[in-house]
Length: 341
Ligand code: EPU
Image (cartoon, rainbow, N blue to C red):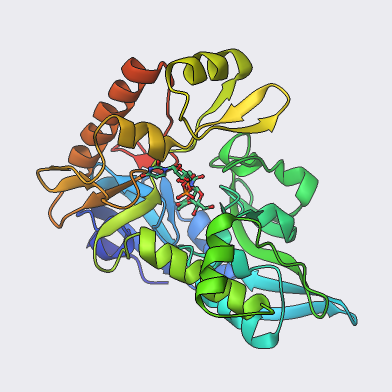
């Protein structure tokens, strides 16, 4: 096991923020992870995966464990379904492509989401009408306290909108090492209700779409709206879409009848944070090296040399303006990592 010192994390976070790790280990196996957890005389650990959902606001006085455990296998299958296991360090989109190449369905709407498989359950990644929980079977996670592997069922994970057990009670206690997903082999259930998907499939001139075409449609939509982190540093949606009460919804609608709000339960309504931010005049604006994307106001971008603090200051200014204009609090979706992480 190689323990490196004073390592730049710029290439390890999709925001492209310069921050340094005091110690850094590339973890390539479950055994190696267990050994790293037993090291003594080092600062606290910080688990770094694909780096696509973090904002580094300072150097990390930490023992950074970069999870790079690879492997995809079939655990079980019958004529109609298959359960696959993907190790935590598998790139998520690579896994989606692997499934499509095998003709497996279920992941196509989640095409092109940045990040690695091991972090997908933490925030229950979702896009275009599908969430990870819809295909999730179980996962294995290492207990940080004793290095034992613990199996988690879907119920154990307590999935919610961009939320799970691992973001709440399980935070800092478990490191997900592998994820099992249940996919379809023959009769795929396509999710094409999201208007933009139908339009993209029609634009492709496709009469009878399959999982591959849905994936291509999702890729086309994402590419048209979301910046590629390789070209412009970003972490996808910076904020979650706020869920408001019926009372707050009625107040919002009376002041802004055009607000694109949708009902999620009898008493709860979701408001696109991108709309709130756009109404406040932020879309496409640039403040130094930090900015708000021109096609999707929910995405904050780094024009090259922004510090994590600059991005965070911009995020706070947006939160304040949205709160004073709409009386709605918006919360970051991205994990803000400070010196005390
Ligand atoms: N909108 C605006 N202005 C904007 C952006 C959005 O007015 O700048 C409004 C429009 O009315 C639009 C609506 O918001 O119809 C919804 O926009 P979009 O379909 O782009 O979805 P979103 O709610 O902004 C969420 C996820 C995305 C996911 C898309 C598609 C969250 C926080 N974000 O965005 O996830 O790709 O739906 O399902 O839930 C991510 O998590 O990183 C991410 C990109």
